[in-house]
Length: 352
Image 1 (cartoon, rainbow, N blue to C red):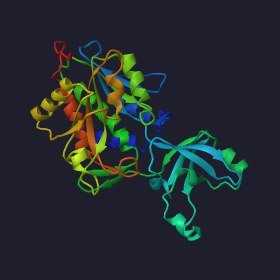
Image 2: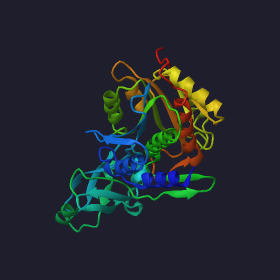
Image 3: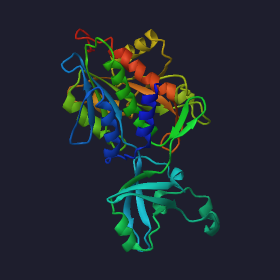
Image 4: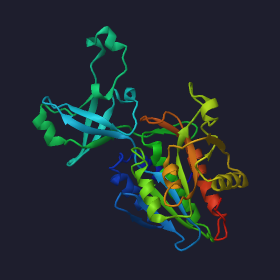
């Protein structure tokens, strides 16, 4: 991956943007997109970057830019904050974490507290933690001081910096799916450097995926594209306890994961497979007999239906502050999408 793209990826992963409050991350994405594309946004908070305006077919590339987080629900008289999850958390991951709360006055640092093991009853020690039994401590001495720092409804993310690991791997929060927002823009950048692209291509950094696929649904309705490719993470199956029989064989470094599913377009899926093989890009296949659980679902069923494919990146430890991906896999996701779109023209038949 070129240095400028890698620097952009790191900035994007490090910027907080939980579902419904993606503005800071969206700003980073839009500033990068403005270097080579026409950029705009919508009332939901989706960000759009377009090249080849007026070309055919119109193709939407969707990667959601939101991440899971927390939201303050109550301020206790002693100044401790009760909270709930924004998106799907394993509460065990939250225990003992530091939190970056996005308050009116700026970021507030807090720590997630839990009853210490020393003062637990024996039966309590055997129970898993639930979010309702945890709290956030921002150091306030009482409720009045806490209310001067944060409000009910303020959101936050885990305070965890990106770590570069050996063998081209990185660990970070927000990989799911800030990585996808990066990939669709990187694919667009690659296409912008080509001499002849027939398609109009719109990369979209979608909001609110983690709470219901809402941003992609609105974006797809407004764009009404002929085809779309969603980008997300999928479970890397090279760690203990993850069944390859159920999830397939997707190791870090094995390349993009191309989905074959009953609710996405086989025309787009086969096109992506052919593009990967034509460019000698390593890939694996993933099967799904129902919905994919990604933005591809929302896009595919918008309006009268949109021919949609799904490209995923193998990811270890999903929905944790240390999601691990291989940077080469990330880059190859962008490459395979770019290679596929280069094959499209006004004569491409997307009707099944």
